Image (cartoon, rainbow, N blue to C red; front, side, top):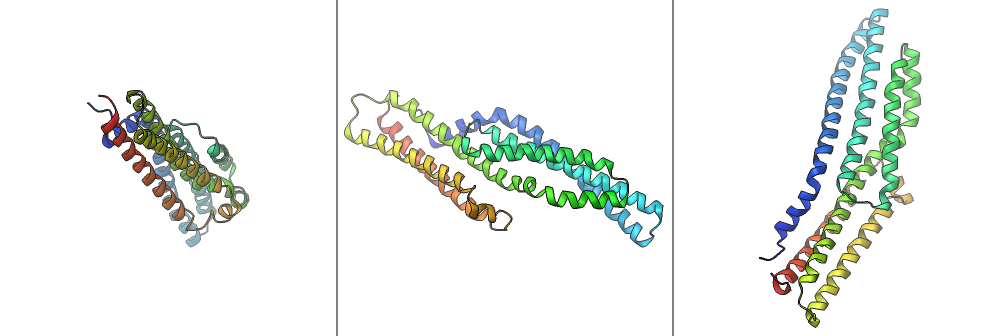
Length: 257
């Protein structure tokens, strides 16, 4: 029985990732729960704020301030949990890829920032406290918020890198099954496959390093930030699927059972 089919290879890759799905499922659940709390608190705050504007009594003011504090706390907790979720997703790829370490650190710092802001919001008592908190937050939350954008891209990159590792491992399993000495056509196929793998690695490196360029940093808040990256990721995935086809050809036509 031959070792490889495309379905088998992709399935094996998913099995490698499966244990990690338990960890990020928990992280996802935590985030979704906290985000649900935020939405509920925000809806309550909206109503109480309207009540205060319609009837600006001291009692209504205090209710609106308390609701605002609860909303901010749940929002920051949700953001901290989302940072945790992204970090868990990246970790689930089971690879160590130095070029995304800076993004991972940014997410880690963002998680700490949002957790601290959730605690800080508990000191809000007066309208002046709320105004001061909001002004300070608007200034200091820019970089942590941006880390979510780069973090999502880093997760996709970690998947690409993880798949590259699995492809190389599959080739390493097949090579000992090839009859020696290798024929010239077979050696050429293997050389081409190794070259293609290196080219894909280089493409991933180039793509990742570009994230830190001045151009990308200046474009990080735009609506188009993800569009070209999505195209690049799809192109890399296409190259990886072609690589699998070549590997399957070697396995089916040259490897021993």
